[in-house]
Amino acid sequence: MKALNKAQLIGNLGKDPELRHTGSGTAVCSFSVATSDRYKDSSGEWQDKTEWHNVVVWAKLAEICAQYLKKGSKVYIEGSLQTRSYEKDGVTRYSTEINARDMIMLSPVEDKGRSDHQSNGATSKGTQAFAPDDSLPF
Image (cartoon, rainbow, N blue to C red; front, side):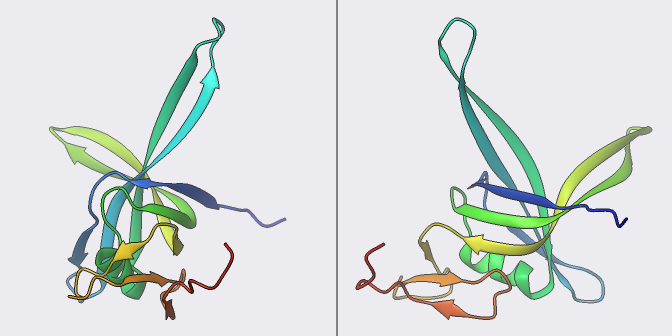
């Protein structure tokens, strides 16, 4: 049987995406996504629990994320979990992040590079863009 490493999130960005480039010129974008759950505790009071997820996106999709997403954007992310280690102050630390393969914007966004501020959307692989059709009933 094959193994499966798949993560799916729907949440909101906690800060604006950060775009960098590797030494070979490959784009890499990182941002955090918050997911929240609401439940009643044993005393009947509503409680909110928020989890923060670090997301890393590569290549063309990284450029699309940096261009269209911003703090507060609602987004669907799909990818795999990846844990990396690093040293800080002589202590080995670990960080788990989602290496995203797909992204769907769920909020209207403004293209930071456009001056007309028209709402845009892009598919998960960034191969198409569309403008919302006001004639659709949903």
